[in-house]
Image (tube, rainbow, N blue to C red; front, side):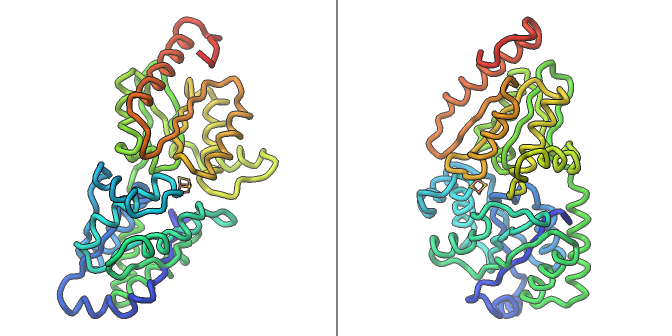
Length: 332
Ligand code: SF4
Protein backbone atom coordinates (compact mmCIF):
# COMPACT_ATOMS: atom_id res chain seq x y z
CA UNK A 1 0.00 0.00 0.00
CA UNK A 2 1.46 3.32 -0.96
CA UNK A 3 -0.77 4.69 1.82
CA UNK A 4 -4.00 4.63 -0.01
CA UNK A 5 -4.92 4.03 -3.56
CA UNK A 6 -6.79 6.74 -5.16
CA UNK A 7 -8.24 6.89 -8.54
CA UNK A 8 -10.70 9.64 -9.06
CA UNK A 9 -13.43 8.87 -11.56
CA UNK A 10 -14.56 11.92 -13.33
CA UNK A 11 -18.18 12.82 -13.19
CA UNK A 12 -19.20 12.90 -16.86
CA UNK A 13 -20.86 16.22 -16.31
CA UNK A 14 -17.61 17.68 -15.14
CA UNK A 15 -15.53 17.29 -18.29
CA UNK A 16 -13.58 20.41 -18.99
CA UNK A 17 -15.08 22.33 -16.10
CA UNK A 18 -11.83 22.49 -14.19
CA UNK A 19 -9.99 24.37 -16.90
CA UNK A 20 -12.90 26.71 -17.49
CA UNK A 21 -13.23 27.58 -13.83
CA UNK A 22 -9.55 28.27 -13.54
CA UNK A 23 -9.90 31.07 -16.02
CA UNK A 24 -12.09 32.85 -13.51
CA UNK A 25 -9.56 32.79 -10.66
CA UNK A 26 -8.34 30.42 -7.97
CA UNK A 27 -10.35 27.25 -7.96
CA UNK A 28 -12.05 26.19 -4.75
CA UNK A 29 -11.81 22.44 -4.15
CA UNK A 30 -14.25 21.08 -1.60
CA UNK A 31 -13.20 18.09 0.49
CA UNK A 32 -15.81 16.57 2.84
CA UNK A 33 -14.46 15.74 6.30
CA UNK A 34 -16.12 12.34 6.38
CA UNK A 35 -15.20 8.65 6.05
CA UNK A 36 -11.46 8.20 5.41
CA UNK A 37 -10.66 11.92 5.41
CA UNK A 38 -9.48 11.33 9.01
CA UNK A 39 -6.77 9.03 7.67
CA UNK A 40 -5.73 10.54 4.36
CA UNK A 41 -6.32 14.27 4.73
CA UNK A 42 -2.60 15.18 4.59
CA UNK A 43 -2.32 13.76 1.08
CA UNK A 44 -5.53 15.25 -0.27
CA UNK A 45 -5.19 18.73 1.18
CA UNK A 46 -1.49 19.02 0.29
CA UNK A 47 -2.01 17.79 -3.27
CA UNK A 48 -4.70 20.32 -4.12
CA UNK A 49 -3.05 23.14 -2.21
CA UNK A 50 0.25 22.59 -4.04
CA UNK A 51 -1.67 22.65 -7.31
CA UNK A 52 -2.62 26.20 -6.43
CA UNK A 53 -6.23 25.55 -5.42
CA UNK A 54 -8.09 26.88 -2.41
CA UNK A 55 -9.09 23.89 -0.34
CA UNK A 56 -12.48 24.14 1.37
CA UNK A 57 -12.95 21.56 4.09
CA UNK A 58 -16.21 20.94 5.89
CA UNK A 59 -16.43 21.46 9.65
CA UNK A 60 -15.98 18.70 12.17
CA UNK A 61 -19.05 16.51 12.27
CA UNK A 62 -21.84 18.13 14.26
CA UNK A 63 -25.60 17.83 14.69
CA UNK A 64 -26.40 19.92 11.62
CA UNK A 65 -24.14 17.76 9.45
CA UNK A 66 -25.64 14.56 10.84
CA UNK A 67 -29.19 15.87 10.31
CA UNK A 68 -28.38 16.84 6.72
CA UNK A 69 -26.85 13.42 6.11
CA UNK A 70 -29.93 11.66 7.45
CA UNK A 71 -32.11 13.89 5.29
CA UNK A 72 -30.26 13.28 2.02
CA UNK A 73 -28.93 9.73 2.33
CA UNK A 74 -30.92 6.54 1.86
CA UNK A 75 -32.22 5.09 5.14
CA UNK A 76 -30.43 1.77 4.69
CA UNK A 77 -26.93 3.26 4.71
CA UNK A 78 -24.67 3.12 7.75
CA UNK A 79 -24.16 6.25 9.82
CA UNK A 80 -20.65 7.09 8.46
CA UNK A 81 -22.04 7.19 4.91
CA UNK A 82 -24.95 9.35 6.06
CA UNK A 83 -22.51 11.68 7.78
CA UNK A 84 -20.46 11.91 4.58
CA UNK A 85 -23.59 13.08 2.76
CA UNK A 86 -24.02 15.74 5.45
CA UNK A 87 -20.46 16.97 4.95
CA UNK A 88 -21.04 17.23 1.21
CA UNK A 89 -24.26 19.18 1.72
CA UNK A 90 -22.48 21.58 4.06
CA UNK A 91 -19.82 22.65 1.51
CA UNK A 92 -21.40 22.08 -1.88
CA UNK A 93 -22.29 25.75 -2.30
CA UNK A 94 -18.87 26.96 -1.24
CA UNK A 95 -16.69 25.14 -3.76
CA UNK A 96 -16.21 24.95 -7.53
CA UNK A 97 -15.35 21.27 -7.59
CA UNK A 98 -16.06 18.59 -5.02
CA UNK A 99 -13.78 15.66 -4.24
CA UNK A 100 -15.63 12.41 -3.50
CA UNK A 101 -12.87 9.83 -3.06
CA UNK A 102 -13.89 6.51 -4.51
CA UNK A 103 -11.32 4.47 -2.61
CA UNK A 104 -11.19 0.99 -4.06
CA UNK A 105 -8.02 -0.70 -2.85
CA UNK A 106 -5.27 -0.09 -0.37
CA UNK A 107 -3.64 -3.51 -0.71
CA UNK A 108 -3.59 -5.98 -3.52
CA UNK A 109 -6.29 -8.66 -3.47
CA UNK A 110 -8.32 -6.74 -0.88
CA UNK A 111 -11.02 -4.13 -1.15
CA UNK A 112 -12.67 -1.44 0.90
CA UNK A 113 -16.35 -1.74 1.71
CA UNK A 114 -18.65 -1.70 -1.37
CA UNK A 115 -20.20 1.51 -0.10
CA UNK A 116 -16.92 3.25 -0.91
CA UNK A 117 -17.01 1.96 -4.48
CA UNK A 118 -20.42 3.46 -5.09
CA UNK A 119 -20.08 6.51 -2.87
CA UNK A 120 -20.01 9.11 -5.69
CA UNK A 121 -23.15 7.69 -7.27
CA UNK A 122 -24.92 7.62 -3.91
CA UNK A 123 -24.05 11.25 -3.27
CA UNK A 124 -24.65 12.56 -6.79
CA UNK A 125 -28.07 10.92 -6.94
CA UNK A 126 -29.10 12.04 -3.46
CA UNK A 127 -28.10 15.70 -3.29
CA UNK A 128 -29.27 18.26 -5.84
CA UNK A 129 -27.24 21.10 -7.30
CA UNK A 130 -23.81 19.64 -6.66
CA UNK A 131 -20.79 21.20 -8.32
CA UNK A 132 -18.77 18.96 -10.67
CA UNK A 133 -17.03 16.16 -8.82
CA UNK A 134 -13.69 14.43 -8.96
CA UNK A 135 -14.56 10.85 -8.17
CA UNK A 136 -12.35 8.56 -10.18
CA UNK A 137 -11.52 5.25 -8.52
CA UNK A 138 -8.51 5.30 -6.25
CA UNK A 139 -6.18 2.32 -6.29
CA UNK A 140 -3.38 2.94 -3.79
CA UNK A 141 -1.57 -0.35 -4.10
CA UNK A 142 1.53 1.29 -5.59
CA UNK A 143 2.98 4.75 -6.03
CA UNK A 144 2.62 4.38 -9.77
CA UNK A 145 -1.09 3.69 -9.57
CA UNK A 146 -1.65 6.53 -7.18
CA UNK A 147 0.30 8.82 -9.47
CA UNK A 148 -2.01 7.86 -12.31
CA UNK A 149 -4.85 9.21 -10.25
CA UNK A 150 -2.91 12.40 -9.50
CA UNK A 151 -2.20 12.91 -13.21
CA UNK A 152 -5.87 12.49 -14.06
CA UNK A 153 -6.96 14.93 -11.34
CA UNK A 154 -4.26 17.44 -12.34
CA UNK A 155 -5.10 17.22 -16.01
CA UNK A 156 -8.74 17.75 -15.18
CA UNK A 157 -7.79 20.94 -13.38
CA UNK A 158 -5.63 22.06 -16.30
CA UNK A 159 -2.31 21.73 -14.46
CA UNK A 160 1.01 20.96 -16.10
CA UNK A 161 2.65 17.57 -15.67
CA UNK A 162 5.51 19.17 -13.80
CA UNK A 163 3.22 20.89 -11.31
CA UNK A 164 1.27 17.67 -10.76
CA UNK A 165 4.49 15.71 -10.15
CA UNK A 166 5.72 18.21 -7.56
CA UNK A 167 2.31 18.37 -5.85
CA UNK A 168 2.09 14.60 -5.78
CA UNK A 169 5.47 14.15 -4.09
CA UNK A 170 4.70 16.90 -1.57
CA UNK A 171 1.41 15.16 -0.82
CA UNK A 172 3.11 11.81 -0.35
CA UNK A 173 5.63 13.33 2.03
CA UNK A 174 2.88 15.04 4.02
CA UNK A 175 1.08 11.72 4.35
CA UNK A 176 4.23 9.90 5.43
CA UNK A 177 4.98 12.56 8.05
CA UNK A 178 1.50 12.29 9.50
CA UNK A 179 1.47 10.40 12.78
CA UNK A 180 -1.83 8.72 13.43
CA UNK A 181 -3.08 6.52 16.18
CA UNK A 182 -3.45 6.62 19.96
CA UNK A 183 -1.06 4.91 22.37
CA UNK A 184 -1.79 6.16 25.88
CA UNK A 185 0.80 5.65 28.57
CA UNK A 186 0.55 5.87 32.35
CA UNK A 187 -2.86 4.20 32.81
CA UNK A 188 -3.32 1.11 34.97
CA UNK A 189 -6.18 -0.12 32.83
CA UNK A 190 -5.88 -0.07 29.04
CA UNK A 191 -8.19 -1.04 26.21
CA UNK A 192 -7.74 -1.57 22.51
CA UNK A 193 -10.12 0.69 20.63
CA UNK A 194 -11.06 -1.06 17.42
CA UNK A 195 -13.29 -0.18 14.49
CA UNK A 196 -13.22 1.65 11.21
CA UNK A 197 -11.13 4.82 11.47
CA UNK A 198 -14.09 7.15 11.03
CA UNK A 199 -15.82 5.52 14.00
CA UNK A 200 -12.73 5.80 16.18
CA UNK A 201 -11.65 9.33 15.25
CA UNK A 202 -14.96 11.13 14.74
CA UNK A 203 -15.64 12.27 18.29
CA UNK A 204 -19.16 13.43 17.43
CA UNK A 205 -20.15 10.00 16.07
CA UNK A 206 -18.72 8.11 19.00
CA UNK A 207 -19.81 10.72 21.55
CA UNK A 208 -16.34 11.62 22.73
CA UNK A 209 -15.50 8.04 23.56
CA UNK A 210 -11.75 8.62 23.77
CA UNK A 211 -12.08 11.48 26.22
CA UNK A 212 -14.67 9.61 28.27
CA UNK A 213 -12.48 6.54 28.62
CA UNK A 214 -9.48 8.61 29.60
CA UNK A 215 -11.63 10.39 32.19
CA UNK A 216 -12.59 7.00 33.60
CA UNK A 217 -8.88 6.22 33.98
CA UNK A 218 -8.70 3.96 30.95
CA UNK A 219 -5.82 4.27 28.49
CA UNK A 220 -6.33 3.57 24.79
CA UNK A 221 -4.29 1.78 22.16
CA UNK A 222 -5.27 1.80 18.49
CA UNK A 223 -4.17 -0.46 15.68
CA UNK A 224 -1.74 1.87 13.92
CA UNK A 225 1.06 0.75 16.26
CA UNK A 226 0.86 -2.90 15.25
CA UNK A 227 3.02 -3.78 12.27
CA UNK A 228 1.21 -4.63 9.06
CA UNK A 229 3.06 -7.96 8.83
CA UNK A 230 1.68 -8.98 12.23
CA UNK A 231 -1.88 -8.04 11.27
CA UNK A 232 -1.50 -10.03 8.07
CA UNK A 233 0.02 -13.09 9.78
CA UNK A 234 -2.78 -13.28 12.33
CA UNK A 235 -5.47 -13.07 9.66
CA UNK A 236 -3.76 -15.85 7.68
CA UNK A 237 -4.68 -18.27 10.44
CA UNK A 238 -8.35 -17.85 9.66
CA UNK A 239 -10.04 -20.46 7.50
CA UNK A 240 -10.39 -17.78 4.83
CA UNK A 241 -8.55 -14.47 4.71
CA UNK A 242 -10.96 -11.53 5.09
CA UNK A 243 -11.74 -9.84 1.81
CA UNK A 244 -11.99 -6.34 3.23
CA UNK A 245 -8.87 -4.46 4.34
CA UNK A 246 -10.17 -2.91 7.56
CA UNK A 247 -11.83 -6.18 8.51
CA UNK A 248 -8.52 -8.03 8.21
CA UNK A 249 -6.67 -5.32 10.09
CA UNK A 250 -9.20 -5.10 12.90
CA UNK A 251 -9.22 -8.84 13.38
CA UNK A 252 -5.41 -9.03 13.36
CA UNK A 253 -5.14 -6.19 15.85
CA UNK A 254 -7.74 -7.63 18.24
CA UNK A 255 -6.19 -11.09 18.35
CA UNK A 256 -2.62 -9.86 18.61
CA UNK A 257 -3.28 -7.29 21.31
CA UNK A 258 -5.12 -9.86 23.44
CA UNK A 259 -2.61 -12.66 22.96
CA UNK A 260 0.33 -10.36 23.71
CA UNK A 261 -1.51 -9.01 26.78
CA UNK A 262 -0.94 -5.45 25.64
CA UNK A 263 -4.35 -4.37 26.96
CA UNK A 264 -6.89 -5.50 29.52
CA UNK A 265 -9.91 -5.43 27.23
CA UNK A 266 -11.22 -4.55 23.79
CA UNK A 267 -13.86 -2.04 22.80
CA UNK A 268 -15.15 -2.41 19.25
CA UNK A 269 -16.97 0.63 17.87
CA UNK A 270 -19.27 -0.46 15.09
CA UNK A 271 -21.89 1.19 12.94
CA UNK A 272 -25.36 -0.24 12.90
CA UNK A 273 -25.94 -1.79 9.46
CA UNK A 274 -22.25 -2.41 8.78
CA UNK A 275 -21.88 -5.70 6.91
CA UNK A 276 -18.10 -6.16 7.33
CA UNK A 277 -18.32 -5.46 11.08
CA UNK A 278 -21.08 -7.99 11.59
CA UNK A 279 -18.71 -10.71 10.39
CA UNK A 280 -15.51 -9.64 12.07
CA UNK A 281 -17.11 -9.09 15.46
CA UNK A 282 -18.29 -12.70 15.48
CA UNK A 283 -14.85 -13.93 14.43
CA UNK A 284 -13.19 -11.97 17.23
CA UNK A 285 -15.70 -13.25 19.80
CA UNK A 286 -15.10 -16.82 18.68
CA UNK A 287 -11.32 -16.44 18.80
CA UNK A 288 -11.25 -14.70 22.18
CA UNK A 289 -14.11 -16.24 24.17
CA UNK A 290 -12.70 -15.29 27.58
CA UNK A 291 -11.20 -11.88 26.83
CA UNK A 292 -13.16 -8.80 27.97
CA UNK A 293 -14.86 -7.49 24.86
CA UNK A 294 -17.37 -4.65 24.61
CA UNK A 295 -19.22 -3.88 21.39
CA UNK A 296 -20.63 -0.39 20.96
CA UNK A 297 -23.04 -0.14 18.05
CA UNK A 298 -23.73 3.41 17.03
CA UNK A 299 -26.21 5.05 14.72
CA UNK A 300 -28.01 8.37 14.57
CA UNK A 301 -30.49 7.24 17.25
CA UNK A 302 -27.95 6.06 19.80
CA UNK A 303 -28.38 7.72 23.17
CA UNK A 304 -25.36 9.07 24.97
CA UNK A 305 -26.58 7.88 28.36
CA UNK A 306 -26.63 4.27 27.13
CA UNK A 307 -23.06 4.53 25.87
CA UNK A 308 -21.91 6.14 29.12
CA UNK A 309 -23.48 3.42 31.25
CA UNK A 310 -21.90 0.64 29.23
CA UNK A 311 -18.38 2.05 29.17
CA UNK A 312 -18.54 2.86 32.89
CA UNK A 313 -19.58 -0.71 33.68
CA UNK A 314 -16.87 -2.09 31.39
CA UNK A 315 -14.18 0.15 32.88
CA UNK A 316 -15.31 -0.85 36.36
CA UNK A 317 -15.13 -4.55 35.51
CA UNK A 318 -11.64 -4.16 34.00
CA UNK A 319 -10.44 -2.22 37.00
CA UNK A 320 -11.64 -4.96 39.38
CA UNK A 321 -10.09 -7.67 37.23
CA UNK A 322 -6.78 -5.83 37.16
CA UNK A 323 -6.50 -4.79 40.77
CA UNK A 324 -8.57 -7.20 42.80
CA UNK A 325 -9.54 -10.40 41.13
CA UNK A 326 -7.28 -11.41 38.29
CA UNK A 327 -9.77 -14.00 37.09
CA UNK A 328 -12.91 -11.93 37.42
CA UNK A 329 -15.59 -12.97 34.96
CA UNK A 330 -15.60 -11.13 31.64
CA UNK A 331 -19.35 -10.91 31.94
CA UNK A 332 -19.23 -8.61 34.99
S1 SF4 B 1 -17.37 -0.63 6.30
FE1 SF4 B 1 -19.32 -0.55 7.43
S2 SF4 B 1 -19.32 1.45 8.42
FE2 SF4 B 1 -17.80 1.52 6.76
S3 SF4 B 1 -18.86 2.33 5.00
FE3 SF4 B 1 -18.96 0.11 4.88
S4 SF4 B 1 -20.91 -0.43 5.86
FE4 SF4 B 1 -20.41 1.67 6.45
